[in-house]
Image 1 (tube, rainbow, N blue to C red):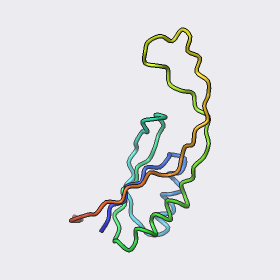
Image 2: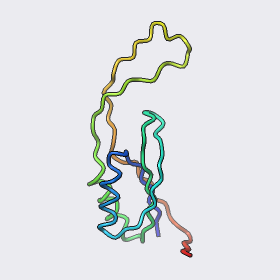
Image 3: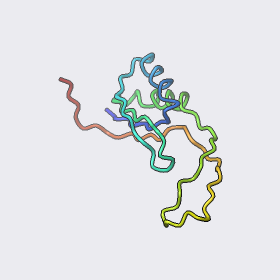
Amino acid sequence: MKLIVAIVQDKDSNRLSHALVKAEYRATKLASTGGFLRAGNTTFMIGVDDEQVDDVLELIRTNCKVRDQLVTPVTPMSGSTDSYIPLPVEVQVGGATVFVMPVDRFEHF
């Protein structure tokens, strides 16, 4: 058995959630926040049998897309903001960060 932890952008969260339900996979959704952009994410925890891992990874890959987004950098921490003019920067966001971990024991009460 494996535990899949997938961190996805909020924009992809509903699409992935519906795909998991349609494929009859159970998942727990947690609200989370990314450290770089400080934007909302959703973390999915999905417990599956070993032979189902590839199917779930394909669902994640299909429903969580990378996209370009303009973001304004955060004000510098040095305290001097007099000459700081934040200009938008284009970065890639979205997609998914996925961890697959072995499960030694599973109990459901």
